[in-house]
Amino acid sequence: MLARPDAYRCIGCIECGLSYRAAGFSYYHGDVANGAAYWSDRGILCSPRCSLAHHRKRAAEGTLQQEPAPDPFEFQPLSQR
Image 1 (tube, rainbow, N blue to C red):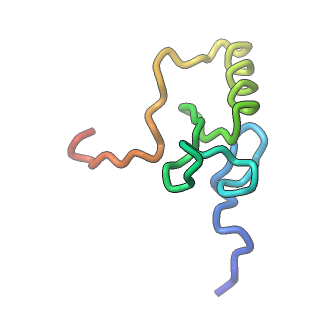
Image 2: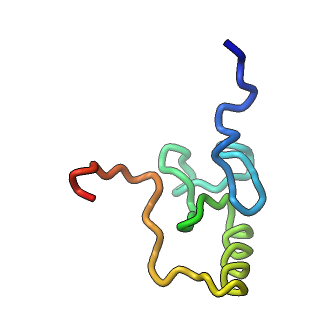
């Protein structure tokens, strides 16, 4: 089996591409176990800078969300959806 150099490469910031768990990635309350501090309905954002850039881009496109995106790290059983 091939070794993967970065097990978290597929999960990263949708604005800049910074990998999850990389230095500089912002976590909720500073704890990686709590998940990312910023997210949208389109994916995870790594920092306040990327969050603002994503908001500005969506505003220019006219595609801003009208309600908060669901927390991607909260588990909800299928029976409750």
